[in-house]
Amino acid sequence: MSGFAFKQFKVEHDLCAMKVSTDGILLGAWANLAGANSLLDIGTGTGLLALMCKQRRPALSITAVEIDENAYNQALQNVANSPWPNIAIKHQTIQSFNSDAPFDVIISNPPYFNHSLKGNNAARNTARHTDGLSFEELINAFKRLSHSQSRFSLILPNTEALVFIELATQKGLYLNAHCQVKATPSKPISRSLMTFSYLESQTDNSTLCIRELNNNYTTDYITLCKAFYLKMA
Image (cartoon, rainbow, N blue to C red):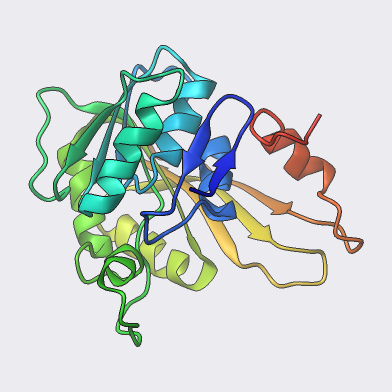
């Protein structure tokens, strides 16, 4: 098995359609966990987001939901082999998931391809395309499983993020934080990290560049992610 080793845990991803990616690492490091006691990870895949958030805030009660059986089993394995085996992994759709208590924070690195051509890997299609989890269903899941002070953080490509922001606004949510990410100084914005809630506030807008032109990680990216990468001081 070829996994991805972090400072405090390792993530195997050979059974998962969606591998460990910079998108997931960005969201796991960036999501606002302040004051939270409970967290829900929608579409956990390898379990990466749940594990990163548990490392950042060990007292968090974390539940993660995953529809794909292979990814679910791999997430179970990754959690069991981590310092935090009490993360709860559920094998079901978020549409059918229920909780006795609302969550303080909900996070997701969701599927985002809409009406685009698909490959012949069904699991990868499910992980990448919105057929099984539309943006509207994702927002509805947050609203159903949250309380008035809850926050919802996710990452999307910039174009899809604009669609999501408009839809979330229509459904009564406010964009509280928006970090636009580019790979290098010469590349266009490619990703949007976003936090929504029911509380109206001026949006905290920021930008993040991952690498310098010489391909070294930027100081900002190192500051955000150094608690996780093995070779970051």
